[in-house]
Length: 264
Image (cartoon, rainbow, N blue to C red):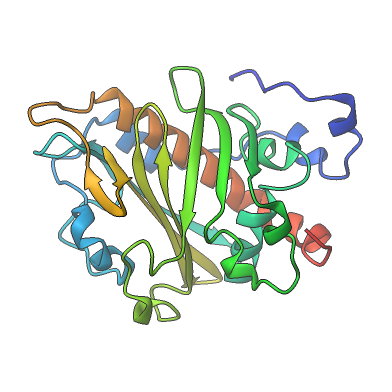
């Protein structure tokens, strides 16, 4: 078992500290098998066709796994069934963990998360802003470990329209809501999490396209020709992603019941 990140005495006194102390939820064996099996032979849906992912029309592409595409960019795909979770809970979770105590981010993955801090707290905490819009135009400054050690990342969240998504697909069978961002750091990437009702909870679908950035208002591949993202990069991100969202699925219903009705 990995060692948990440090917490302060002030954090220990917070009512949700108990979520930090409990064991992490166990990642399903089938996902650990995918991780151990190596890179997927099928690539994820290309970034310029990301609306296929939004509409769940990407059945010909990888949906669970990781790897490096022919053009050298990398991808991570994950799908998490979250029983007992609702879309309302997830709309709340993404702004909630970016304000207040760093402990909010730590309880998501106590072994790898250090902090996530929104740069526009007044907007995030404004009760007039609809919950599903509280990430739009907000940057999250994050410290986390996805394999090689703690690293700093800036996640620039966008509205779905600004990310290039067809907003007509939102509120449909396969996309109740979503968050999307472009990451700035040592390995820039585009990211989207989509969720919709499924069985007695939600199906939470994640995609990462590594090697893309927002340049002069356009989303572009920024890898030089002939350069390839090392295999260890998507492998580490996949391992982290299946771990953190398995744990979030386990804690979110109770967390929401206790704190979802309180101001952010």
